[in-house]
Structures are given as structure tokens and as C-alpha cells.
Length: 234
Image (tube, rainbow, N blue to C red; front, side, top):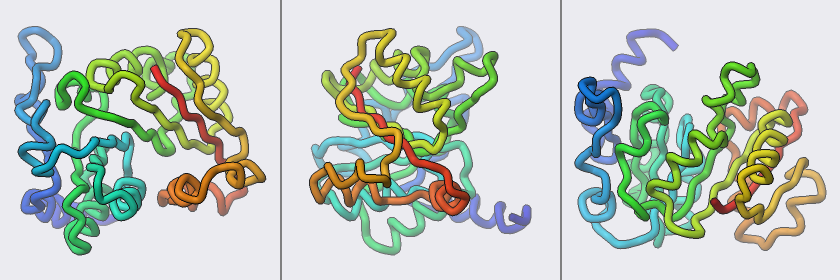
């Protein structure tokens, strides 16, 4: 994508009422070397969605296909797509605006700072859709299902809140299963081949959700990659 087009999309995003791009200084305190609570934390429903519906968070949302797709299907839930790539988020934010989805919003920031944006018990569910598997050993702490990140999610995920992982990476799938076992999380469901016979075991609503495809999933499936899925509680 050309730099000019990116800049135009960034300018668009600043006008979108459903997209938020906080400055780092708003939530990162260099003096203490850590995050501080952002004003949106604890206020997503009251200030953004104007209702008390459950909040579902999509991490590494890319173009927001899951957030938008689930927003259409579940008008009584609120969805927040989170990614650092503003030029990607632009697609989802624009589609949500043009189709009148008032229950879909987007947050552009690094997931490392996620705990600054949500209050205790504010989020009901997390979807992690096709993240970078970070296969190198020295990148283990960067995996979005590592204990480091799970401990961050626990700061704002409701008790018994669900975490979903959908990935084409057998490495990340197996790593996550190992983490679930090692740290005693509750494994609710998993399949090493979602679109094989496994998807037929789910009810129609769940099948519809799982059949939502991100841009990257489309690329991976065209290359013959097998898609895996895990659902667990922490």
C-alpha cells in the first residue's frame, strides 16, 4: 500500500467516532516504566456503546472481519477490535459505520498495553484471530496465549470469561494446549482441523461464527493450511 493512501486512511480514522487512537503518553508513564489507566477503562459501555451489553474483544483484529461479522449477528453484544495497524483497522471501522453497526468499535494500540484500556471484569470474552505465532524461542513471551498475556487478560476478563484462539499455526495450537495444561486453565473445546468434520459438531450459530474468515485466513486456506481452534477459560 502506498504511503499516500495510508496517510489518507489515518486521517479518516481520526474522524471516525468508532475508532480510538490514544497517544502513548495517555496510558504509558515513563517515570514508572509501565501503564496507567486510560479514561476509557471501565467506560466503554457508558461512553462508547451507550448500553450495558457484554463486551467481546478481538485481539490482532486486522481488518476487523470478526468484530464486524459478530457485531451483525449479535446486536445485544458489543465488540472491540484491537490492532496496531491503523491502515487495516480502517476497513472494519468504515464498514461498521457504513452499515450502522453501533455495537462495533476499534482501538489502535499495542496489545502489550492492553491492561491500560479495560477495568476489572469489563470484558466477557476474547477472540484471538490468526496472531503471529512468534515461533522463535526468544519470542515466547510475545505469544498472545503465553502466561504473560493471559495474566494481563485476567486483569479485566470476567470470571469464567472465555478465550478463543483461531490459527493456522500448528505450533501455536500445540503451545496453547500445553499452556492450558501447565497452568490449569479450563479447556472447553479444541480441534486440530476446524473445517474438517469437526465444525459439523457445533450448533448452527457457532458454525456461523467459526465460518467468519479474516483476510489472512483466506490467504492461508488458499495455500492449503489447516485451521485450528481452541476455547478455554482462565
